[in-house]
Image (cartoon, rainbow, N blue to C red; front, side, top):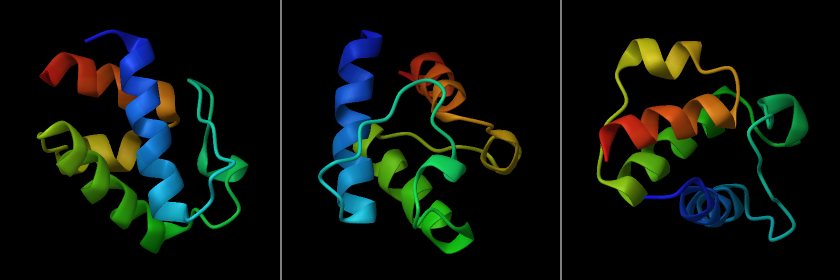
Length: 79
């Protein structure tokens, strides 16, 4: 799967989780860039991403991801 497709799918997940159609994520996007991205929404986001891509993040990955680019790297390594 190409990065472009992963980012397109992630954009849809982020837009759904945060109920904001204007969100467009890139490799440098962090929780500081999205107003409602707090610890509770982070859990919802992780679950939604796992469902979208049919994979599971381990706890270490969830707690150490610094940006969306790292999330994409993990997704690419699993699919």
